[in-house]
Image (cartoon, rainbow, N blue to C red; front, side):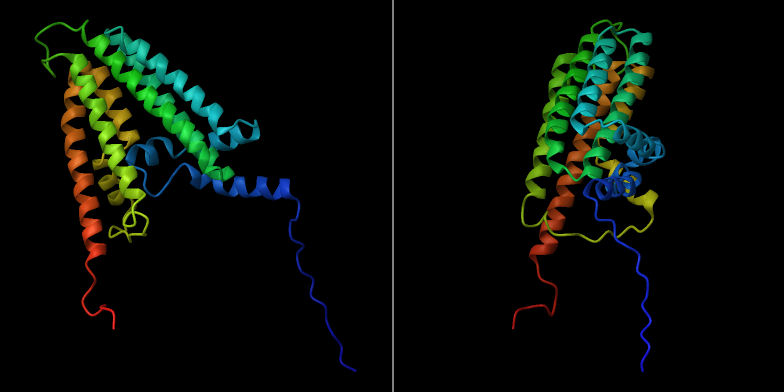
Length: 261
């Protein structure tokens, strides 16, 4: 008679609510530190933002709620920037940093919950918040003494130019991502994480933009902020456009020996 030994298998978790909570807890540490983030999002926020994501998830906060709170902090930063004083720009810089941290938390909640549709209201609020910050900086530039460093022309024209440059750049990014070239995975050539994120930072993502605004506005004033935004933004747009063209060309030209037979 053959003896059959039964192995005990661990029972699977089949409770939907508990399974979803477990998945969110596992995904939360990685949701705010994405591979494509720059240096600011990864190292100035990513170290403690996962704990904020867990706290917000345990309180039942939705990504849209966190995005709305982030917009309020950004609007307050714009109000302080519009004062044009050194204390106002320092306070605005701090509020803008808190707003970016909340953006990362909202993105982490959306990624952990598996609701990519939540990125649409967050994107709209993010663009409106950045436009409000530019308007506050332009209003505050009128209170700066004439003849100072930075952009010497009309600050409102510089603010509109920086916002248009950002909008064109983001439109190109979305168009490339939705094309047949941008949808294909592209292997990264840089294996070092810091080097990869440093290259990403050259494209001036949101974290680097907000850090640039906060530091230059607090130290040198709004006119210097617009000057750096226009120069770095133009270079970043050319850098990103060259990368898109290179990626599309590399995928359009077949490799040697890969022709169809």
